[in-house]
Length: 284
Image 1 (cartoon, rainbow, N blue to C red):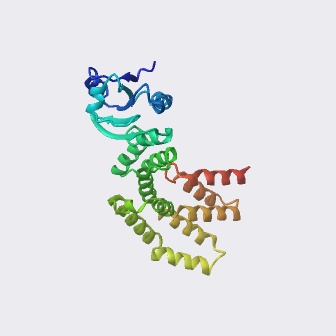
Image 2: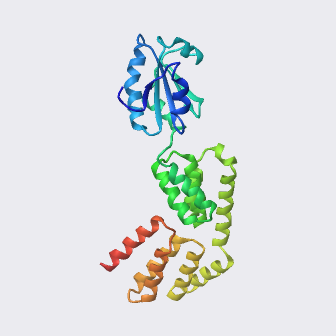
Image 3: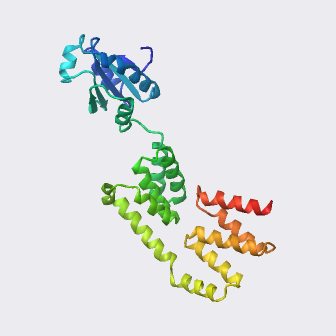
């Protein structure tokens, strides 16, 4: 037991370990006894987890034979028993032999996760109406942990704000029914509805009819692609702009429109890299 974050918990040091040393950290208490074979099998798993979270977790071991009074205070009836303490209070626990995954899942609810900082940044960006930064940070959070439903909802919110309504709808569909009553879920749905209404305005429909009536009028198609981009129908805008430039490779205005669209996509938008590759393949 050499790790700095593994201690023997006794009646004498309980307050120091659980309150003083544990400030800002999670304490995992392992109640064990020498005669308990499952306790011995559990120990290397707990030591491995403690090593993985050396900055945020204290593994406190209670020898229930030597510390019967302490075990009695915690009302321990089965061995092994694991108890999670946070902010000086018991917040979780498991009784009996447990697989590593079950212990990690329990701790994940209380320990800082890799996606936490990115998710915090995304929420702050949304609060400051910085949708581009929110989208980038929320996407990073979801990439780090696709099962974090809070991050998925924030990404859906950011995606809707930057105009990725289809992606936002796909993300909302991943969430359970319990999330659908949350105010943010309802807010995202409202943003999607408003965006879809704006993206199918009478002006755009009229321009689409003109393009259908004059399919060879490339100038009209160029106008439509710009209109699509302005209402955040990015994929349609880029596809049309690329088609126009392919049709008239010598037309610098078409090329400029396409590059301007790519450069003005929301930060972190995967469409940017997709269409830069398409442009590169045409140039070289």
